[in-house]
Length: 199
Image 1 (cartoon, rainbow, N blue to C red):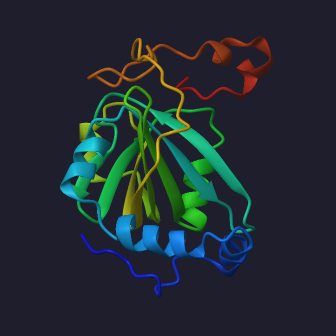
Image 2 (cartoon, rainbow, N blue to C red):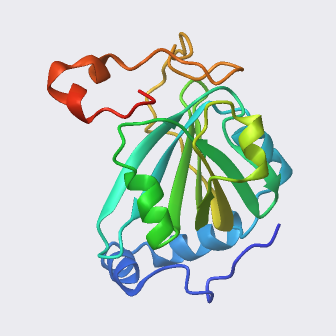
């Protein structure tokens, strides 16, 4: 685990301007040194491996961002090593916004939240997708595997996370054979003529 230093250009000029305006630059520098790493330590690896959902942010070549909820079973994200994460991309709405953005720019942000404890972890990185990845067999029903080369990770304060209680796993998460119920919205008459043979 390697901490970045306050001289590694972690912050942008615009972020620095706001830090100066609100007199938080010394705090920002201290936090960068204390919590920002370019790897994921063993404690955080266990935290990631215990999640069954996360939020994924991606960006187009034009700088247009999007954020997507990614859910599955516990262990949805595989920690390959302290610098590499991998996760499946399952059947969605056919728009492939996240996957397309990853193919274009590769820049991603992942936000892991434990809404019961609460805790949260941010991971930034460079991603790629592959429909032949060896991990596909570990995720029945996945269309693609996304691998993320971690550039930074840091724990965030959980004080604004509203505490929730987890009830159950979504019935749409693929089972051990990759089977899942068809999404209700895919039965709408107005889209039947554009559905794939698979659906």
